[in-house]
Amino acid sequence: MILPRRRFILLATCAALSPALATPSEVAGLIQALVGDAPLKDGLIHLDLPVMVENGNAVAMSVSVADPPSPVASVHVFAEGNPLPRVAVFHFGPQSGAPRVSTRMRLATSQTVIAIARLKDGSCWRDSVDLLVTLAACIE
Amino acid sequence: MVRVLINVPKDIRANEPFDVKVLISHPMESGQRRDQLGLAIPRDIINHFICALDGETVLEAELFPAIAANPFLSFSAVTEKSGTLTLTFTDDHGVTQTETVSIIVT
Image 1: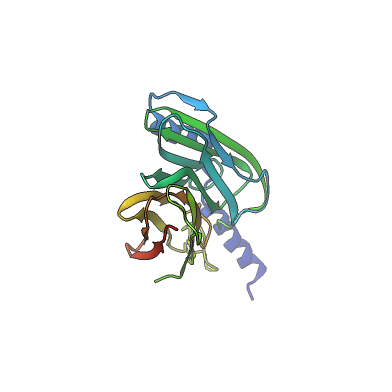
Image 2 (image 1 turned 90 degrees about the vertical axis):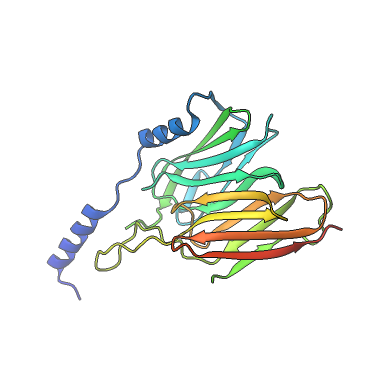
């Protein structure tokens, strides 16, 4: 049993120590560092995520690149509203059947998730999904 | 050692892509959470995953704390002959675990 005043202090400390969320500008910086001087175009890559998320602890996510003009070097996924913006990086090898991958991710809040595909020819492609999260992944 | 479930189709045809599904039983502790006393729970995740078919890479993944607990990965592979699929993953303690599955082309 914790006294109400102690509980208040504990909660206040937790709130003060809880991690800051990433910002869209931080993600933009990461993407800039990744893409460099190459042109970044919308399309080609498809990021599949539900628009309404009930539980942010495990959200099915899939990324695919349909008919790439040159082999896909890597696919990067970023979440703008998570404490850490990087979600995953995928590299496809010579035995890959198709440049697509599915997994389950955590979402800390309603936010925009961005996927970037980098092809072997140097071009970069982007897709994003704006989503609403009802129950956030626990970060405290 | 963690429990790993790997699923590949029963009839795989030469040069036809097939799906590989992997489910790893792991808490993927994000390092963002705190326990009841307010102390940070240390990060413990699988940060690297690589799947290879007879030594040639199928998929290599760098994973971050934003991947949900018990990570699931589904991806596509292709082969022209029977072989061995090797899945290797590394956690934050540097422990590497390898699982293998035989691929039989019918």
